[in-house]
Amino acid sequence: MKIAYINFYSISNRYRAGALITDSSTRPVEFRVTSDLNIDKLQEILYGEALQEVLYKERFTTQLLKSMQEEYDIVLIKDKNLMSIRDEINKPVVHIQKFDQFMPLNRLSRKIINIHDRYEPLYITVNKEDEKRLVGISHFLQEMYRNFNIMEPFKRIENAIKYIMENSLETERADICIR
Image (cartoon, one colour):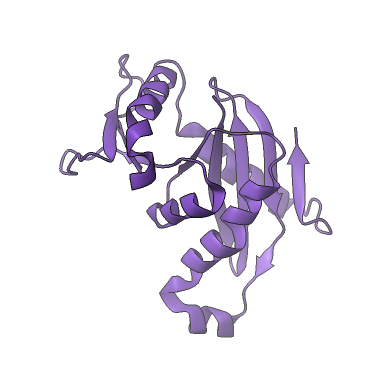
């Protein structure tokens, strides 16, 4: 099973997103990053608090996932606002976050633990459309989490975007594809 991770990075008024597909041992299979999207002060004022949601969901995530050449089975996201992309990509979208004992478990969520206590417990949530897949997804992620930190690829994406922005790599192209 292959996982598509989505993450974002912004500095000043420059925004970028990256998508990384990994195999079940978190080895990179494909990476894409958007070009800089510069937001001016007026746009920032007009969009207000909705700015990041609009950028990340409408401008970045769906386009990035549709541009991937490698197949993937699930999408892992840290921003719960992106759960609705499920309808556009027709693949399970899994919101993943650190486990909080006060968060209620329900039929759409599961706790994931590392049995060796190397990594902190996690909490995953799926859309209603994937309720029947939750057990399989959670077992797969639980098995992965035995040996690999399944949160770490988010940091890789952020670091790659920072590196690209700081070194002005590929500024003419809309994306960088590493396969």
